[in-house]
Length: 255
Image 1 (cartoon, one colour):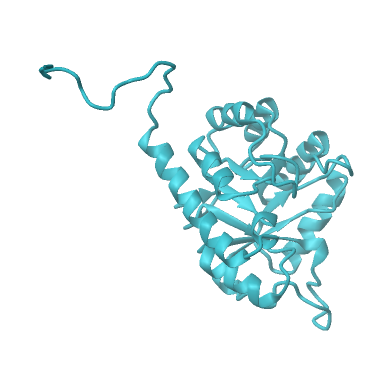
Image 2 (cartoon, one colour):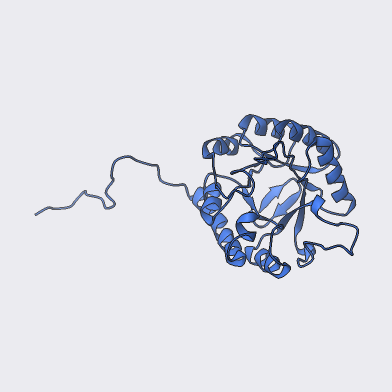
C-alpha cells in the first residue's frame, strides 16, 4: 500500500482522465489498469450543472480516490480557489497543486507553487505539488509539510520519458514523503524506469489516452509499474565496464 497522508492507495499507478476518445474506452482503460486513484482538472469539469457534459460520467467514482488538480491556475490564489471548489463539491481533500509558469513548455512555477502549498496546508488539505526536478525545492516543500512530491519526468504531454534521471534520483533519495513521477511518460519503459529509480508511484494520462490502443496500454503500464518496483526492491547488479563470465571458471579442467 502507498500511503499519502491518511490515504492508502493499493496501486502505484495513478491515471489522468482527460483526452480519451470516448467514455467506454476511458472506462475500460481505467478498469484494466487497476488504479484506485484518478486525477482530473477541476476547471474542466462541471461539478454543479448536471446538464453539461461530464468527462467522468462513464466511471463509477465511488470505486476510486478522486485526486483533483489545479491545472489552469497561474497563481497561488487561483490554485487555492480551485481546490476550494473541489472541496465544496465533495471531492477528496488530496489536491495536486499544478501552477503553470510558461505557456510554451508548460513547466511549473516553483515560487507560486510553494506559496499555494503553504496556503493549502494551513487549510488542512493533503498537498501534493507538481514541480520540476529540483531537489532543493523538493526538500523545502517536504519541510513545509507537503504529503508527497510530484517531479516531472518531462514536459506535459511530450512522451519524452525520464529526461533528468540524476536529479530525479536526488529527489527520491533526499525526501521521506512519497515521490510520484508525473508528466512526460511515453511508454511502459519510462514508467518502469521511474520505479526502478525508487519512485513511489507514477501518474500519467497522455501515454494511455492517446495510444493506438488505450486499453492495452493501460494494462501495459500496470505491469510496467509493478515490474519497476520489484526491480528496485530486488536491487540491480552494479554496472561493470569489463566482461564477466556468466559461469564460474574455478574447478574446470581444460584439455
